[in-house]
Image 1 (cartoon, one colour):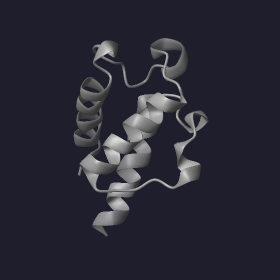
Image 2 (cartoon, helix red, strand yellow; image 1 turned 60 degrees about the vertical axis):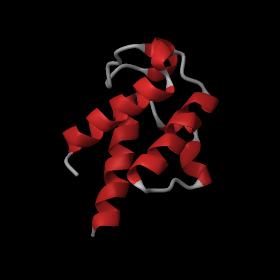
Image 3 (spheres, rainbow, N blue to C red; image 1 turned 30 degrees about the vertical axis):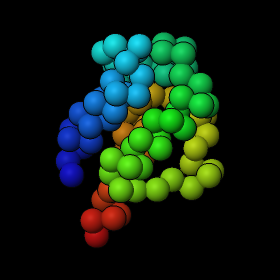
Image 4 (tube, rainbow, N blue to C red; image 1 turned 90 degrees about the horizontal axis):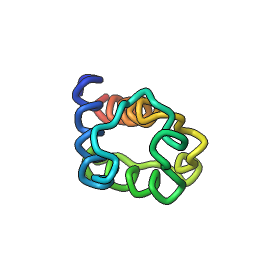
Length: 85
């Protein structure tokens, strides 16, 4: 799966899971710009696990690991690439 496909899929998940955010900028800081908290990021990660058939370890669920949605997309892309190998 290409990086842009992952980005578009993440945007769709955000729209489904957090419709109140509206159109998001993948580069913006998620806590200050969108009010994302620990529960919100875990909810999004769980949705991504189901969509992409990947899994995150407990230590990968920390909000501090993701400054932007782009950071989350990069981790998901890496997991998809490893799965496809």
